[in-house]
Length: 172
Image (cartoon, rainbow, N blue to C red):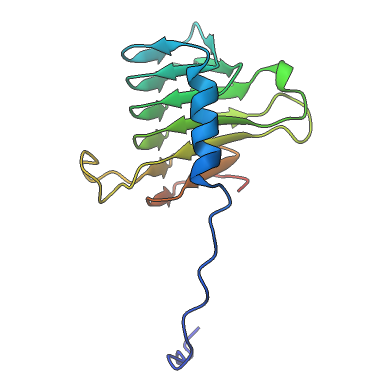
């Protein structure tokens, strides 16, 4: 705005993140209570329903596939949604929200989309514990990359960067 910056002011007081590590661990524990899938999971045009579930590998949703989340998901690898892939909450969530947690980075591109259960007040929360781009194994990726018209509801990256571009939208 072409105004000079007043550097004489002190930094604002740090505020706590909206979710605590305890909240995230509770969702991880809930996901693990549904069992563990070892290795990568690929959801394509045929679609799938998962949850609660812990996945030790990566989760990829593409080819217009829809993943219906029936309980908390914990992905220890990366989450990639592209090619018109969609994640939605099962109707059993009602007006409640659901959590998808990943320890790796997230890539949401090419029309990726998220939806609640279909009832007002139901939102999927996508949470990453990744510290990308500075953590080991990030390979230059941000913790969350949202681009190419992708849309979602709520993104949470408490320790990493979020990059939003290319006509993407989000609620929070």
